[in-house]
Length: 383
Image (tube, rainbow, N blue to C red; front, side):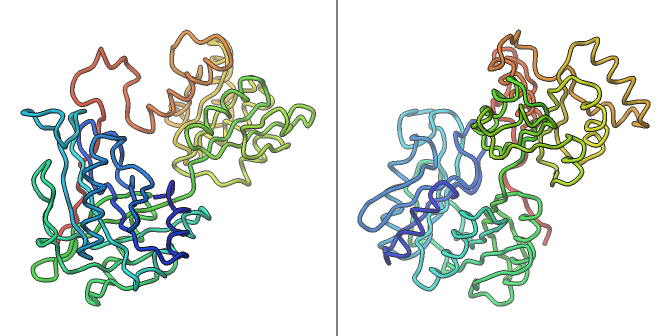
């Protein structure tokens, strides 16, 4: 919902009624991930997207129906073998959508959530899901929607709003907070028997970080690629004549400091990508020794194979064990035959995207099975 948060806050400020359609679960070759959203105002204005075009028209109509009926509706859209161009996903995937008319009593909670999203604060929004979704391609039924329409916004240390189901509220808050800490978005089944409820938890966390060490032309190209991919990009180098904002306009910040000193004082988490492009031992070894012991998901270093062998010898001398050394991606990047800085940046970005998404790095024509490998779409909690 981040892409349309600004427009939705404007609608709330104007007092406009609107419905939000959010992707709650996906499988197969679906074009958008859980959390993608389309919003429709009562005057017919629409912002956002849930499918990149495949089922936008049908979801748009569901939003208008939900605004008229005042209740949420849940719908599944999938590929139709009998009519591939009917309402469905011609790419072969399945998308489940929650269409949710925002009630006046929920406006304050929703506005606080959207404000946090725009500010980059970690925040989660939990919404109770109505009944079971309809069959693939069907228009859904507002009459079969459940009566629970409450929402709750959750921060790391507090929450706002009420579900209108007091006995479920603490459970939902705890579950939403756990998913926020993990940065996960999706449906959750909570409780059991008559107290059972299914909620959709949508989380927003700050963008993942890309730390680029070495103020060289390859770093400028990688900063551009990282920003395009949605990373918060930092370029760091100890040489002030090279580490300037003018040389790296696509970086969110340019830091003049020794790489290992900056790495010691900055935030690094399990989504952080570290690319060491200096290929100079006096810079490389100290920062890599710290990076390989950090929680960063990717640590890569530029250099020839001869440089790599010398680097590994020096890193062993610092006390790194074989498991820690095995985390190092060196020489950095996938084998694309890259020559230019831009091509090299592409090969590096392709490698850390493949690692993040669990890709093989092979041509899709050389693989079989689903194009978009996914974990189980529905995460369930034992009752």
